[in-house]
Length: 141
Image 1 (cartoon, rainbow, N blue to C red):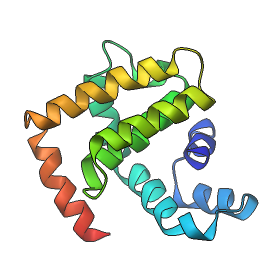
Image 2 (image 1 turned 135 degrees about the vertical axis):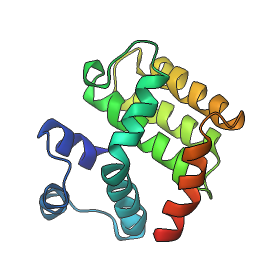
Image 3 (image 1 turned 120 degrees about the vertical axis):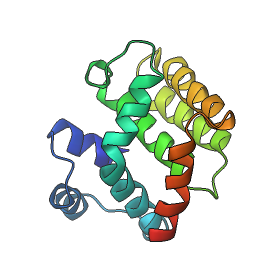
């Protein structure tokens, strides 16, 4: 989340910015592969992820959300769509916990509302194209 926050604040979601972040902040070896999968995945899929977030955010434009909330939600949506080994409810619960820790007083409820709406739509196959892309993107990793 911190790397995506850093790149988002700089308004530059690029590999160069990810490298700059990693050159200045240590990434624990045990989470290194997952860190890169999430960071690169969110960067690659960010336009699609943002469209989905806006669709389920009850009139909140992505740019109006706090940077912390926006990036927590992006990570969770990426996990829900493309990490088939992580149950969506686990992604949602983790996002809520991170939001409560690093966001504001309303972050947990805000994050939960958006992500749970996306989860329900996924269960109803209302994001069918995104489910198909989940398998395709996972196979590319």
